[in-house]
Length: 417
Image (cartoon, rainbow, N blue to C red; front, side, top):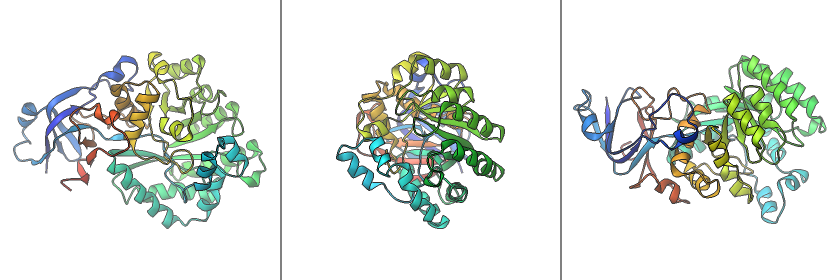
C-alpha cells in the first residue's frame, strides 16, 4: 500500500545530477516548502509541492501520515567502526589527563587494545551487539551505514567481524555496507613488522573475504607507524583486482602521502583528510575520489586542526561527512552532531553539510544511483525532523531532533510504526 507523507514544512530533495556533488552544486538542496512525498514498494513515486503530489494516481488511496517538520534523505554514514566488543574507557581517561594519540598507542592502548576483546567475543554476541547499535543510528535519521572490520587483525577474527555485519543486516532495517580493514594496525604477534603483516593480509585474509563476498570495500590506515603510501597503493590495487572497492584512511595525523596513494589506486573515498595539501586535493579531484570528513573525531580528540573543507569544496572535490563511530576516538553515532561540527569547525554551510551527509555520503558508498535524494524512482529512505527550518539541524546540537525514520518505504523509527 502506498504511503503519503504530507504536512512537510520543508523538503530537501537534493534533485540534480546522478553524480557526487562538488563546488556550488553542494549548496543546491532542491528545497520545496509545503511539500509531500508519496511512497510505494520501497520507492519514491512522487515528491514536491503538496498540491502536485496529491494529484498522483496513487495518492487518493494511500495511507496518509501527517508530519510537521523538515524532511530530507536518510543520512548515509560512509565511515564507521561499529563492530567492537568494549568501549576504550582507559584510553578516554588517559586522554582527559593529557595523553596524545601516540602516547596512548605506546602505552598499549588505541587500536590494539580492542583486539583481544574482539578476538574473544563469540560471533552471536558480536552480531547482537551490532544490531542493537544499529537501532541508535536509525533513531537519529541514519538509514545506511558502512561498517569496518579492523579490530581482529587475524584471519579468523577479521572474517568473524565481517560475518557479524552480514548477520546483523538480517536483524535491522539499517542498511549495512561491510568494509575489510584488516590493514588497520600491526598486531603484536608480528613484532611491529608492517610489511610481513600486510603480506599475510594480502595472502590470507583479503582473498578469503573476497571469495566469500563478505566485504564491498577494502580500506587501509596509511599513517606513520602503520602503513606507508607505497604499501597502500599496492594493497588497494590488489583489493581492486579481487573485486573490492578501495578506500583509504589518510592524512589524519600528518601529511604522509596516503591520499595520493589512495587516489592512484582508484579509491572511492579518502577519509579524514585533516592534513591534505594542494597536491593531495588535486589528486582527489583528478581521480574522482570523495573526501570523507570526520569532524566529530577531531572534536572528541580535542584537536585544534580540522579538515580544510572550504579549500576542498572550492577546488571541486566532492565532500562527504560521516561519524567515524568507534570505541576509541569517536563514540558518536548521531550524524546531527557531525553536521554541527562541520558547520562550526570546518566552515561548511548548512546546505553543504546536509549534502555531504546524504547525497555525497551515498556516493562514497557507491550507492548514489539509488539513494541520497528524494526524487521519483529513488529508494524511499527518509528522515523527518522536529524543525521549522532545515538549518536548525546544524544549529542545534547535543540532542536528537529526528522524530521519524523511513527505510525502503517502511517506518522504522518514530510515529506511525
